[in-house]
Length: 46
Length: 231
Image 1 (cartoon, rainbow over the protein chains, first blue to last red):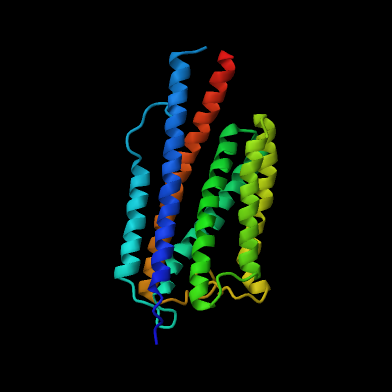
Image 2: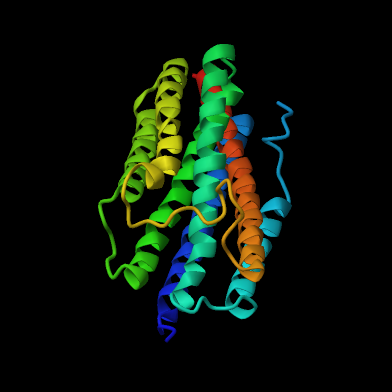
């Protein structure tokens, strides 16, 4: 008999999506912050 | 300074394509791939677990080793940035392996975790790559940081063949490879297609995240240079 364990697959796929999309969002935020910092340094050097 | 890294960019097409490819794999795995009779629906975890492991071990950490070796030889900062980016993205893929593995293991072994050679060595590699990232954060001097991390990166990648062969060298609960082996893959063609599609989708995702992470490393170095100039 095939076991009824589909919930484990759903949880695994959901967590995987959260990790990859979360990491991608973190990278975007880091890139945005660095671009802003670089722009600030270019327009307003100390 | 005119540099394509510093110029504003539109949407990241490669990342968009990679995310769409992964989404398509999700649909194929759940809607168009038969369920394995003995393991049940949890067997679907294979498609994300094994392909993430392939990408981490055979793309990310092999690239880390190659870039580190070349850095020690050529002393080109770009190679150090490739190594740094590959290590971090590889760490994320290994995290997915370590999350999805226990979920699958619980359904087929009845245990979330077992201290067998394959699982333990993968966890050990995860900690080494984590320490690689911490080392990078701890050393201020750019040249020294690159040198030390290159050595640690090469040592970490030496674990990859051990992890691959661990299921042959020791008695483990972890199954033997069903695809990456000398004989014919032991998997029905529909499942094999889903697996290959997953591998391509996750490899694309790796390429997109690596490119993004490399851009960040370049921008960070540019900011550091600019700050030094204006200090």
